[in-house]
Image 1: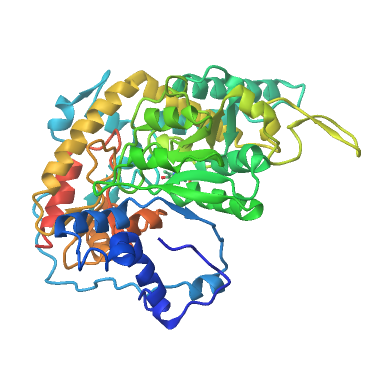
Image 2 (image 1 turned 135 degrees about the horizontal axis):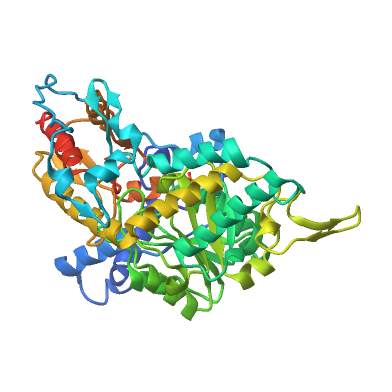
Length: 516
Ligand SMILES: Cc1ncc(COP(=O)(O)O)c(C=O)c1O
């Protein structure tokens, strides 16, 4: 594990990725202390091979690491750079793909019942799914990046701008009252959807990224002293790494990382070992955006609480797939983005326990969040307004409410059950593609089906799929640490959601088989 050091210039060996003599010696001493300490006494004792393998594996996969983070400029980063080889060998011609199924004919989608609707009815609720891309029906498998919007959300936005638009909380006129009602009702819908005790515990933000930055700066940073520790997991999206690095850098805190096993599952025993008297906060994802691992969130929370430490749950990739109840899981903070749950971009929410929001400092200053201002002092409004300086995304909050109500009508347990079936089908079909290796094989997965295809670059795979209207994401998915842990710089990542059909999986697999 490297500690990032922006000031020390790397040696030539380091630039080439070769460990220095000192690093090799330290590694050897850590792995085989008996060799360095007692070699002479035991008369040439060598550890027996199995124990040796085990120790090497533990050294590379389970070693708890702590980082004194540095956020680097491009120039500084260049010094730290490593050369990465990406295979670019496109082999063969595009093969014939066969007939795409006629989506208008009665088929599987009519027989799949999800709550009160058939899958076909659900698909019909999302107008963009009828779009043709390069002559083929759109197959939207990029839900991890963002989800498509149902007609009810589009209509709700239109209605808001046609009949309700005004700034909130400010005017004494009819439209101000309408928009304030719509905005505050949206807050109530979010509360109900995630099972929070009070709507005063729901802060509207632009999305998960802003939400994590808010908690880091408003609640955690004021508590940090040099040497304090923040725990995150190796699975995190950059949005749940960089904000902690920024505040750690400012305060002298360090970041510790929960490791994962070969399947991409967090190792709880290692997590427990990371706690010390200096641990100040934990921030972990509920679902990995790249591997799809569903983390054991209740245990992660319970263990943090056992150590008297507060915890944030990044719900960006869970909230559209798994029923969430922040009270039952006992999260201290829970954050998510609207656009990943069929709502507009530019809106998301932070849930924070009342007593924590009360002690947190405002993150932004401005209008809306104040009770009284003089040049000498400002008296803030109580939460949540204390954290909502300026004009928020009012229409988008109303759209978020419509999206959550749409899901409530179908029932999140039904959504979850259906997606589980579809994911199981997808995993089984993908296993039939020659040369395809899944990245992330946790027993409990949601949505993501990341893979590598032998002999092809991820870009080649993504481009060919796009030719047939199939949208998947390729790249590092803003989760470079976990990908590098598995030895990759990028992967191809299809991600499913409620409206995906087995026909979408068949289309994906049909094109992937043309690479063979
Ligand atoms: C797990 C996770 N956390 C945070 C984010 C950041 O979300 P946003 O860009 O909506 O702020 C994402 C986005 O992909 C994510 O997948």
